[in-house]
Image 1 (cartoon, helix red, strand yellow):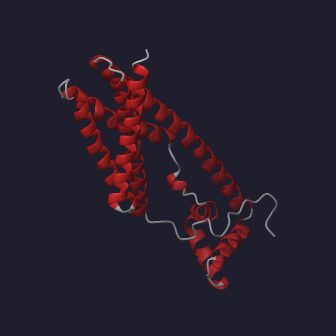
Image 2 (tube, helix red, strand yellow):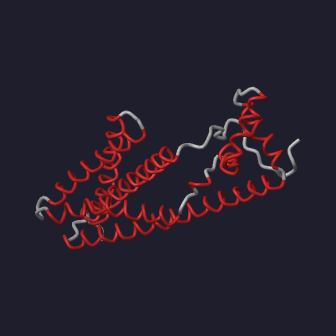
Image 3 (tube, one colour):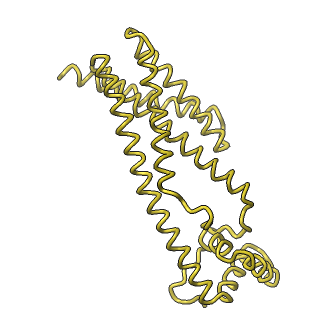
Length: 248
């Protein structure tokens, strides 16, 4: 029987494989950050462009449209960073607390923890005698890492960093949001909306392609979905701007 209050994850949830090699773990971490950066940039592109088109739809002056775009990037980037910091901080606190409990369990009753690990391997199809031997050998090198990954799905060497997540979100959103603003600044007044729209479509197509590549998903559906969503957002806000602008 497991000790009262002992938290053991279901057999289908944990990762009972040995810890990944440092190079592989580093690559996986970079891919996750890159994927998050692409999504943040896409949010910056769509939200800023939608706001610009909404204000432009109300027949606002060029300077007013630019000011609205700059305000959208500033507010959106800070909001993304704050939200990401709060979210990842909560996740980090949970991970640290779980690791502390796991460390205490290992210090209090290492033999029982060894049996728990062996049982997890058995549930994955490993023979009982082999499971206990594998558990002993893996625990001898780094018991906390092995047990944390197998029972909790947490890598002690890759605990989330809220500051890094917040900074990455802020930068990604800002880079994406600057695309429609720069396009508008570099185009003529007569064609600024069209030029901005083309720049946004190209940018969204690129972020959709990168997202598909990182997620190993079909390229065309991802690009079409991304571009269509952005165009829909811009069309709706532009229409609302035209509707409301004529009544103010």
